[in-house]
Amino acid sequence: MKRSTTLLALVPLALAACSTTSKITEEGFIAELPEGVLAIAAPYQDLSAVRIDPETGCYVYRHIGPVENTFLPLRTPEGGPICTVPTDNRTAG
Image (tube, rainbow, N blue to C red; front, side):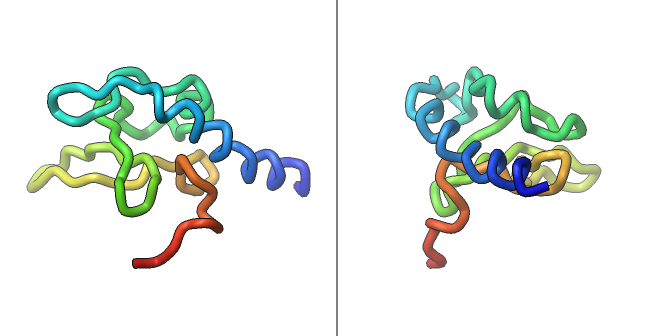
């Protein structure tokens, strides 16, 4: 358990390096997600429309609902957010 917790804590650091080289589409979505994000993202999320929330530094994806479209945090199968910076280092605004 401790090993997987340590691994999850290091993932955002690895993703941070990948996020700066991503190309952005005209709509503002990441054209090609880093392999690290694809590897840890839960399967029920739409990975075709993902961007980074500038306030949190975390990935969000477009959820198309029956009434409205909204952006939801991209999560791992365990429910943790996928961010470009460690969640411990973010400051609340």
